Image 1 (cartoon, one colour):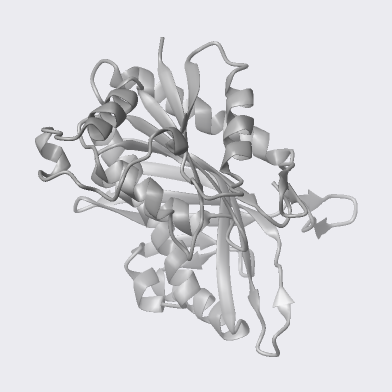
Image 2 (image 1 turned 45 degrees about the vertical axis):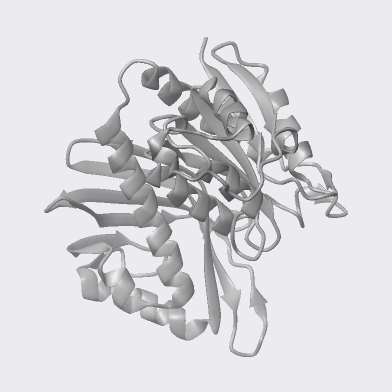
Length: 330
Protein backbone atom coordinates (compact mmCIF):
# COMPACT_ATOMS: atom_id res chain seq x y z
CA UNK A 1 0.00 0.00 0.00
CA UNK A 2 1.10 3.58 -0.68
CA UNK A 3 2.72 5.11 2.42
CA UNK A 4 2.44 8.84 3.14
CA UNK A 5 4.47 10.56 5.86
CA UNK A 6 3.03 13.61 7.63
CA UNK A 7 6.12 15.56 8.63
CA UNK A 8 6.01 18.01 11.55
CA UNK A 9 8.40 20.75 10.51
CA UNK A 10 8.93 22.44 13.89
CA UNK A 11 10.56 21.36 17.13
CA UNK A 12 10.01 24.61 19.03
CA UNK A 13 8.53 24.34 22.53
CA UNK A 14 4.89 25.38 22.38
CA UNK A 15 4.69 24.59 18.65
CA UNK A 16 1.28 24.33 16.97
CA UNK A 17 2.54 21.82 14.42
CA UNK A 18 1.69 18.75 16.48
CA UNK A 19 -1.99 19.76 16.57
CA UNK A 20 -2.00 20.46 12.85
CA UNK A 21 -0.33 17.14 12.01
CA UNK A 22 -2.80 15.31 14.23
CA UNK A 23 -5.70 16.99 12.39
CA UNK A 24 -4.20 16.02 9.03
CA UNK A 25 -3.66 12.43 10.21
CA UNK A 26 -7.19 12.10 11.62
CA UNK A 27 -8.62 13.30 8.33
CA UNK A 28 -6.30 11.09 6.28
CA UNK A 29 -6.95 7.99 8.38
CA UNK A 30 -10.55 7.89 7.09
CA UNK A 31 -9.24 7.02 3.65
CA UNK A 32 -8.57 3.50 2.43
CA UNK A 33 -6.17 4.26 -0.41
CA UNK A 34 -2.97 4.79 1.57
CA UNK A 35 -1.34 4.35 4.97
CA UNK A 36 -0.47 7.55 6.82
CA UNK A 37 2.07 8.06 9.59
CA UNK A 38 3.23 11.15 11.47
CA UNK A 39 6.97 11.86 11.36
CA UNK A 40 8.09 14.12 14.21
CA UNK A 41 11.47 15.81 13.87
CA UNK A 42 11.71 15.70 17.66
CA UNK A 43 12.24 11.96 17.24
CA UNK A 44 15.10 12.59 14.81
CA UNK A 45 17.50 15.03 16.46
CA UNK A 46 19.85 16.10 13.68
CA UNK A 47 22.75 18.47 14.33
CA UNK A 48 23.46 21.20 11.83
CA UNK A 49 24.36 19.39 8.64
CA UNK A 50 27.61 17.59 9.44
CA UNK A 51 28.02 15.17 6.53
CA UNK A 52 31.41 15.60 4.79
CA UNK A 53 30.01 14.73 1.35
CA UNK A 54 27.07 16.33 -0.49
CA UNK A 55 23.79 14.49 0.01
CA UNK A 56 23.47 13.56 -3.69
CA UNK A 57 26.54 11.33 -3.27
CA UNK A 58 24.47 9.07 -1.02
CA UNK A 59 27.48 8.14 1.13
CA UNK A 60 26.21 8.97 4.58
CA UNK A 61 28.89 8.82 7.27
CA UNK A 62 26.93 9.33 10.49
CA UNK A 63 24.47 7.03 12.21
CA UNK A 64 21.92 9.82 12.72
CA UNK A 65 21.94 10.48 8.96
CA UNK A 66 21.49 6.81 8.09
CA UNK A 67 18.61 6.49 10.57
CA UNK A 68 16.94 9.56 9.08
CA UNK A 69 17.49 8.23 5.56
CA UNK A 70 15.89 4.91 6.49
CA UNK A 71 12.84 6.74 7.85
CA UNK A 72 12.32 8.94 4.79
CA UNK A 73 12.96 6.08 2.36
CA UNK A 74 9.98 4.13 3.79
CA UNK A 75 7.49 6.61 2.36
CA UNK A 76 6.16 7.14 -1.15
CA UNK A 77 5.00 10.70 -0.52
CA UNK A 78 4.75 13.38 2.14
CA UNK A 79 2.57 16.08 3.63
CA UNK A 80 4.85 18.70 5.18
CA UNK A 81 3.42 20.76 8.04
CA UNK A 82 5.27 24.03 8.43
CA UNK A 83 4.91 27.23 10.44
CA UNK A 84 6.26 30.53 9.15
CA UNK A 85 9.21 32.05 10.96
CA UNK A 86 10.35 35.48 9.73
CA UNK A 87 8.71 34.96 6.33
CA UNK A 88 10.42 31.60 5.85
CA UNK A 89 10.37 27.94 6.84
CA UNK A 90 11.94 26.71 10.10
CA UNK A 91 15.68 26.05 10.00
CA UNK A 92 15.19 22.61 11.56
CA UNK A 93 13.00 21.56 8.62
CA UNK A 94 15.42 22.89 6.00
CA UNK A 95 18.26 21.13 7.80
CA UNK A 96 16.38 17.82 7.83
CA UNK A 97 15.66 18.13 4.12
CA UNK A 98 19.27 19.02 3.25
CA UNK A 99 20.64 15.87 4.90
CA UNK A 100 19.22 13.63 2.14
CA UNK A 101 18.74 13.53 -1.60
CA UNK A 102 17.72 10.28 -3.30
CA UNK A 103 15.29 9.50 -0.48
CA UNK A 104 13.26 12.61 -1.46
CA UNK A 105 13.61 12.57 -5.23
CA UNK A 106 10.53 11.91 -7.41
CA UNK A 107 8.24 11.59 -4.38
CA UNK A 108 5.00 13.53 -4.08
CA UNK A 109 4.67 16.28 -1.51
CA UNK A 110 1.89 18.59 -0.32
CA UNK A 111 2.03 21.49 2.12
CA UNK A 112 -0.02 22.49 5.15
CA UNK A 113 1.14 25.80 6.59
CA UNK A 114 0.11 27.93 9.53
CA UNK A 115 1.02 31.38 10.72
CA UNK A 116 -0.10 34.93 11.28
CA UNK A 117 -1.07 37.42 8.59
CA UNK A 118 0.06 35.20 5.72
CA UNK A 119 -1.14 31.89 7.23
CA UNK A 120 2.33 30.44 6.65
CA UNK A 121 2.04 31.01 2.90
CA UNK A 122 5.50 32.52 2.48
CA UNK A 123 7.09 29.56 4.25
CA UNK A 124 5.14 27.16 2.05
CA UNK A 125 6.29 28.93 -1.12
CA UNK A 126 9.92 28.64 -0.11
CA UNK A 127 9.43 25.03 0.95
CA UNK A 128 7.83 24.28 -2.43
CA UNK A 129 10.89 25.70 -4.21
CA UNK A 130 13.24 23.56 -2.09
CA UNK A 131 11.24 20.41 -2.80
CA UNK A 132 11.05 21.13 -6.52
CA UNK A 133 14.83 21.53 -6.58
CA UNK A 134 14.95 17.96 -5.26
CA UNK A 135 12.66 16.96 -8.17
CA UNK A 136 9.82 16.14 -5.84
CA UNK A 137 6.29 16.29 -7.24
CA UNK A 138 4.83 19.26 -5.36
CA UNK A 139 1.03 19.28 -5.70
CA UNK A 140 -0.87 22.52 -6.20
CA UNK A 141 -3.66 22.27 -3.55
CA UNK A 142 -2.41 23.74 -0.30
CA UNK A 143 -3.89 24.27 3.17
CA UNK A 144 -3.07 27.58 4.88
CA UNK A 145 -4.21 28.00 8.49
CA UNK A 146 -4.42 31.37 10.20
CA UNK A 147 -3.43 31.75 13.83
CA UNK A 148 -6.07 34.50 14.02
CA UNK A 149 -9.09 32.60 12.68
CA UNK A 150 -8.23 28.89 12.86
CA UNK A 151 -6.80 28.76 16.39
CA UNK A 152 -8.80 29.62 19.48
CA UNK A 153 -6.84 32.25 21.40
CA UNK A 154 -4.03 31.70 18.87
CA UNK A 155 -3.37 28.41 20.66
CA UNK A 156 -5.89 25.61 20.11
CA UNK A 157 -6.52 24.45 16.56
CA UNK A 158 -10.13 24.82 15.42
CA UNK A 159 -9.85 25.00 11.62
CA UNK A 160 -12.58 26.57 9.55
CA UNK A 161 -14.87 24.07 7.84
CA UNK A 162 -13.60 24.99 4.37
CA UNK A 163 -10.13 23.67 5.20
CA UNK A 164 -11.34 20.06 5.37
CA UNK A 165 -12.31 20.05 1.71
CA UNK A 166 -9.01 21.61 0.66
CA UNK A 167 -7.12 19.06 2.75
CA UNK A 168 -9.05 16.20 1.17
CA UNK A 169 -8.14 17.51 -2.28
CA UNK A 170 -4.49 17.88 -1.26
CA UNK A 171 -4.48 14.26 -0.03
CA UNK A 172 -6.14 13.10 -3.26
CA UNK A 173 -3.30 14.61 -5.26
CA UNK A 174 -0.51 13.38 -2.98
CA UNK A 175 -1.85 9.82 -2.90
CA UNK A 176 -2.45 9.68 -6.66
CA UNK A 177 0.98 11.03 -7.51
CA UNK A 178 2.66 8.79 -4.93
CA UNK A 179 0.99 5.75 -6.48
CA UNK A 180 2.26 6.82 -9.90
CA UNK A 181 5.73 7.32 -8.46
CA UNK A 182 5.87 3.67 -7.43
CA UNK A 183 6.09 2.80 -11.13
CA UNK A 184 7.40 5.56 -13.40
CA UNK A 185 7.59 9.12 -12.08
CA UNK A 186 5.58 11.49 -14.32
CA UNK A 187 8.60 13.76 -14.61
CA UNK A 188 7.46 16.07 -17.40
CA UNK A 189 3.99 16.58 -15.90
CA UNK A 190 5.57 17.30 -12.53
CA UNK A 191 7.81 19.87 -14.20
CA UNK A 192 4.89 21.58 -15.95
CA UNK A 193 2.70 21.65 -12.83
CA UNK A 194 5.65 22.98 -10.83
CA UNK A 195 6.27 25.68 -13.45
CA UNK A 196 2.62 26.77 -13.37
CA UNK A 197 2.61 26.81 -9.58
CA UNK A 198 5.73 28.99 -9.58
CA UNK A 199 4.04 31.21 -12.18
CA UNK A 200 1.09 31.85 -9.84
CA UNK A 201 3.56 32.50 -7.03
CA UNK A 202 5.24 35.01 -9.33
CA UNK A 203 1.94 36.81 -9.85
CA UNK A 204 1.41 36.99 -6.09
CA UNK A 205 4.95 38.29 -5.48
CA UNK A 206 4.67 40.89 -8.28
CA UNK A 207 1.35 42.17 -6.90
CA UNK A 208 2.81 42.52 -3.42
CA UNK A 209 5.82 44.34 -4.88
CA UNK A 210 3.55 46.48 -7.12
CA UNK A 211 5.90 45.51 -9.95
CA UNK A 212 4.23 46.05 -13.34
CA UNK A 213 7.24 44.90 -15.34
CA UNK A 214 7.36 41.61 -13.46
CA UNK A 215 3.66 41.14 -14.24
CA UNK A 216 4.27 41.93 -17.91
CA UNK A 217 6.60 38.92 -18.15
CA UNK A 218 3.92 36.58 -16.79
CA UNK A 219 1.18 37.32 -19.36
CA UNK A 220 1.05 36.79 -23.11
CA UNK A 221 0.91 39.96 -25.21
CA UNK A 222 -2.57 39.01 -26.45
CA UNK A 223 -4.00 38.16 -23.02
CA UNK A 224 -7.77 38.48 -22.66
CA UNK A 225 -8.91 39.32 -19.14
CA UNK A 226 -12.44 39.09 -17.74
CA UNK A 227 -11.67 41.14 -14.65
CA UNK A 228 -14.02 42.14 -11.86
CA UNK A 229 -14.31 45.74 -13.10
CA UNK A 230 -15.80 47.01 -16.41
CA UNK A 231 -15.69 46.67 -19.37
CA UNK A 232 -16.70 43.08 -20.13
CA UNK A 233 -13.19 42.25 -21.30
CA UNK A 234 -9.72 43.75 -21.30
CA UNK A 235 -7.70 42.76 -24.37
CA UNK A 236 -3.92 42.85 -24.61
CA UNK A 237 -1.10 43.19 -22.12
CA UNK A 238 -1.32 47.00 -21.94
CA UNK A 239 -4.98 46.87 -20.94
CA UNK A 240 -4.21 44.22 -18.31
CA UNK A 241 -1.34 46.24 -16.85
CA UNK A 242 -3.51 49.38 -16.79
CA UNK A 243 -5.89 47.49 -14.50
CA UNK A 244 -3.06 46.54 -12.18
CA UNK A 245 -1.72 50.10 -12.24
CA UNK A 246 -5.12 51.33 -11.05
CA UNK A 247 -5.03 48.80 -8.19
CA UNK A 248 -1.52 49.83 -7.17
CA UNK A 249 -2.52 53.51 -7.16
CA UNK A 250 -5.51 52.72 -4.92
CA UNK A 251 -3.49 50.89 -2.26
CA UNK A 252 -0.45 52.02 -0.33
CA UNK A 253 0.36 48.37 0.36
CA UNK A 254 -1.35 45.43 -1.32
CA UNK A 255 -1.39 41.65 -0.88
CA UNK A 256 -3.03 38.81 -2.76
CA UNK A 257 -4.08 35.52 -1.19
CA UNK A 258 -5.13 32.36 -3.01
CA UNK A 259 -6.88 29.23 -1.77
CA UNK A 260 -7.87 25.91 -3.26
CA UNK A 261 -5.83 26.19 -6.45
CA UNK A 262 -6.09 23.17 -8.75
CA UNK A 263 -4.35 22.76 -12.11
CA UNK A 264 -5.09 20.68 -15.19
CA UNK A 265 -2.08 20.45 -17.51
CA UNK A 266 -2.02 19.42 -21.16
CA UNK A 267 0.65 19.34 -23.82
CA UNK A 268 0.72 23.08 -24.46
CA UNK A 269 -2.36 24.45 -22.69
CA UNK A 270 -3.37 24.39 -19.02
CA UNK A 271 -5.80 26.01 -16.63
CA UNK A 272 -5.85 26.69 -12.92
CA UNK A 273 -8.90 27.57 -10.84
CA UNK A 274 -9.40 28.54 -7.23
CA UNK A 275 -10.24 31.53 -5.06
CA UNK A 276 -8.40 34.80 -4.58
CA UNK A 277 -8.62 37.82 -2.35
CA UNK A 278 -6.98 41.21 -2.90
CA UNK A 279 -6.57 43.32 0.20
CA UNK A 280 -4.27 45.99 1.50
CA UNK A 281 -3.75 49.32 3.22
CA UNK A 282 -5.22 52.53 1.84
CA UNK A 283 -3.18 55.76 1.68
CA UNK A 284 -4.87 57.00 4.88
CA UNK A 285 -3.78 53.84 6.75
CA UNK A 286 -7.18 52.14 6.67
CA UNK A 287 -7.10 48.39 6.16
CA UNK A 288 -9.28 47.05 3.33
CA UNK A 289 -9.88 43.31 3.69
CA UNK A 290 -11.33 42.94 0.21
CA UNK A 291 -13.52 40.04 -0.87
CA UNK A 292 -13.07 36.46 -2.02
CA UNK A 293 -13.57 35.97 -5.75
CA UNK A 294 -13.56 32.97 -8.08
CA UNK A 295 -10.40 33.04 -10.19
CA UNK A 296 -9.41 31.09 -13.30
CA UNK A 297 -6.11 31.31 -15.19
CA UNK A 298 -5.68 29.93 -18.70
CA UNK A 299 -2.11 29.15 -19.78
CA UNK A 300 -0.44 28.51 -23.12
CA UNK A 301 3.10 27.24 -23.56
CA UNK A 302 5.01 29.71 -25.74
CA UNK A 303 8.60 28.88 -26.74
CA UNK A 304 8.78 26.41 -23.86
CA UNK A 305 7.47 28.83 -21.22
CA UNK A 306 3.99 28.95 -19.70
CA UNK A 307 2.23 32.33 -20.02
CA UNK A 308 -1.19 33.48 -18.84
CA UNK A 309 -3.35 34.02 -21.94
CA UNK A 310 -6.67 34.41 -20.16
CA UNK A 311 -7.87 35.15 -16.66
CA UNK A 312 -11.34 35.51 -15.26
CA UNK A 313 -12.51 36.86 -11.92
CA UNK A 314 -16.12 36.71 -10.77
CA UNK A 315 -18.46 36.73 -7.80
CA UNK A 316 -21.82 34.92 -7.46
CA UNK A 317 -24.88 36.97 -8.35
CA UNK A 318 -27.95 37.51 -6.20
CA UNK A 319 -30.33 37.16 -9.15
CA UNK A 320 -33.48 38.72 -7.58
CA UNK A 321 -31.50 41.65 -6.23
CA UNK A 322 -29.24 41.99 -9.26
CA UNK A 323 -26.13 42.48 -7.10
CA UNK A 324 -22.92 40.57 -6.62
CA UNK A 325 -22.49 38.54 -3.42
CA UNK A 326 -19.20 39.66 -1.91
CA UNK A 327 -19.29 38.31 1.65
CA UNK A 328 -18.65 34.60 0.95
CA UNK A 329 -15.50 32.79 2.04
CA UNK A 330 -14.05 29.57 0.62
